[in-house]
Image (cartoon, rainbow, N blue to C red; front, top):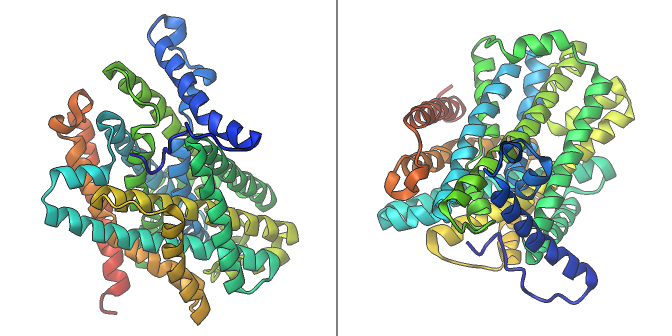
Length: 450
């Protein structure tokens, strides 16, 4: 692919640079050892963290999109307005995300190419270019939301002007993306660390909020609505959870991470990647759930049902739970925005390179995607309102990523012996239909006549 997994044979100057570059090569060596052990004995086939560890990483980068600032906005609104009622939507959305990300990873492993590259190769040029235009709209909307989220986090924590916070966010994302020149592993490690910070933040928030665990257990598995507005919010949760840009990105992250020497290697990589996906997406699902039941316990439980913006949530937490809780919330939001902004830029690279074959420096891509957010901040548009509009744009874009994914993974001529089984294809198209129908409903409710 050449965009995410940069060659590590370069000779950086400092010992730290050499050590960072070595981590990717060492990971590949360890991965080949694990693949060589697979299938030797029954004992070797049992789960081993040491054998699985070299394959952990790509799904954590993809999982960042599932706990980005858009999720903060929708989950907190849902918990504040309806308590624990819509917790089951997060579980259902997360299971859909597991399936979709698994298919995206399998596509990259089976073909050695990413989804945009396959669209360019197999589809008519007009369709491929059209998909690129739609994908770029989604990438810009994603970047806008994530960049704004980080800027709002800095603003809330340090009371700095939003424009200055935006510039600092840009510099921080440049630093994170700069790790790419040392190969894939340093970037995976820093993103996984940032995801862990978000998870720990919400573990602490949960301890402070003391939710009703009986209600959490009941509503996690009991589908319920409370009128049309709760349905609309449920669709918003789905729209903020299943993200189009990481459908493109995941296939790229895994396509040549561990080059396959044999077809058995490809199946082995996929086995380990499924574990990576379940762990990363499971963690993202827990964080999303914690966002909702924290808001349910704190805001809904105290009658603060009108909490609908990130700023209001931050300000309301202090009198209800103390300053520590609002600080933890701000740290989680900042970390989410920084990590997801970096991941959004990576996805933009994959989209442009895959659909068009254009390669541009990552700093230029980051600069281009920063500009809309800086303009929005400079003219004083409300950040939360902009986040909502970005989710509407993503709802429009999502089908244009899922449908090609289902089309290619169901074709034996593309996937070979890793083609979808019949039940996987049926389940995938069912999930695709549900997502498209709900997103069309969201678009109608948002943009239609009132």
